[in-house]
Length: 304
Image 1 (cartoon, rainbow, N blue to C red):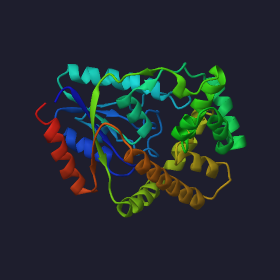
Image 2: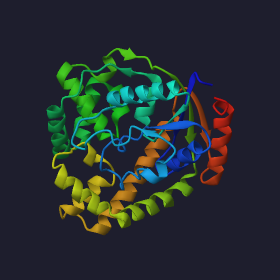
Image 3: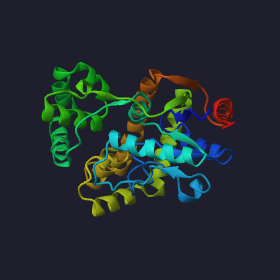
Image 4: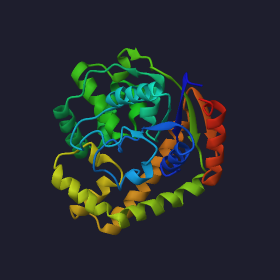
């Protein structure tokens, strides 16, 4: 159905990227990335970004669209995503939004509050404050103004920094601003594998990333972009930075990496459990997930 846009979501390491590429080899679709770290150039290994070879024949959008030291937020991402979706539809193809950044997907599909544009200098100061005082201290400040906004940003330092920037600049929390309606309608398929299946995959992926050169990738990024506070908050990157600063051993960085990713995956389960709209959950992993994705996609979009 051309009046609905498909979204493939789910926790990290559940196989979204590979499944989307596989689907794109069978149907006339183009992928719109909804992973907040894949938008950054140079953050490749730590994000498990698909390679040019893997993407061959399946066009991808919103990958490598911004330098790591440049500001980028969910509102800019939505503008890029909606433009990409419109272009794909004009070409007579199917846009497939793919990613695990729940806040991006929720904002795209449910609309967002029209906030003032971000100020990079103010955000840089807030990142420094976050590192010095800790997230809980800043969260209490936001919670005093808006418990709702505090709940929305808990566990996500990027969103916490942005919410506090808005609050301090305007005296109003983000939820107090008028809401903009989404441009398109969406159907969502959320991968929902058993946690016992996902956890060892996360550990194995972290080990593979270190073996493929994650440390060298981060070292090179720090040399080229000495100021990249937002990008360096990505799990895997901030742990390697601590290793490069001599604060942790390599083994400690790896352990912190995969455990951090696992905690993030559990937060994704919590987030997507409350996903609004037309949502289907696929409680399987591996090849069974592929079969379920095919069935779902064919039911709604295969004739498009």
